[in-house]
Image 1: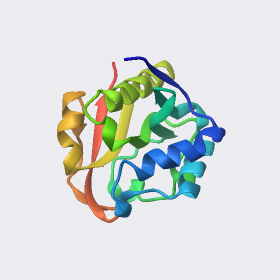
Image 2: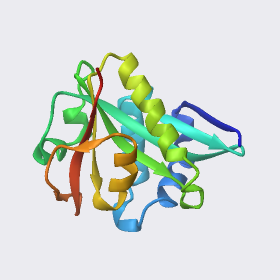
Image 3: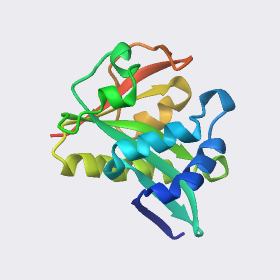
Image 4: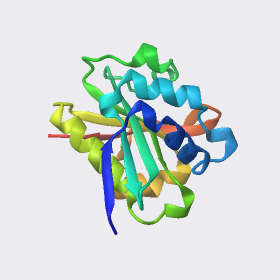
Length: 163
């Protein structure tokens, strides 16, 4: 199985949006404009996964201050992104449903955590719903907040700390 993970580019937007549409229920999908803004805000922290010459997964990220509450994370990306922030924030992770179970999500998270470590960040955080709890626990993440309604569904803040 040949898989390539590379930095995302703006020209990948249509493919990234297609992955988003094929990964989440309609009520959990970001629209194309939101994805474009996430990519443009911190392009270096965004990656795509290519399998069989097709983008089948992606992740986006931001640099943030040491935010630890849902209220902090509810602010617009443009407000919480800080190019000098001490924490790497996984903003989006998606793999087309037909490729779930192949380890592609794990590969993307590992690529992004490696990137965060290379930037000298001490923490990698994100918000996630209960239905992906097992996935993130296997990757060594822990919950640092209670589940609260966030973007319409209960989510918790997750974290991995680097030495």
